[in-house]
Image 1 (cartoon, helix red, strand yellow):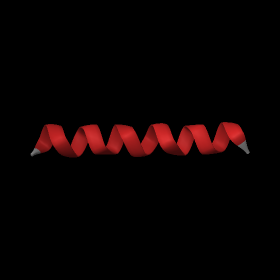
Image 2: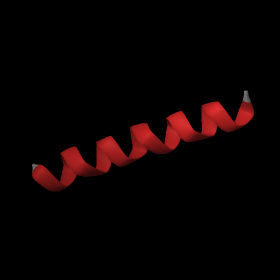
Image 3: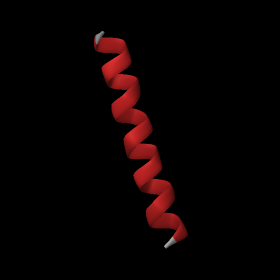
Length: 23
């Protein structure tokens, strides 16, 4: 559970980075 939660958090952060980079 903890691993999945951490992975999801990492994916969310990565997506946020990608969005900021695109903008």
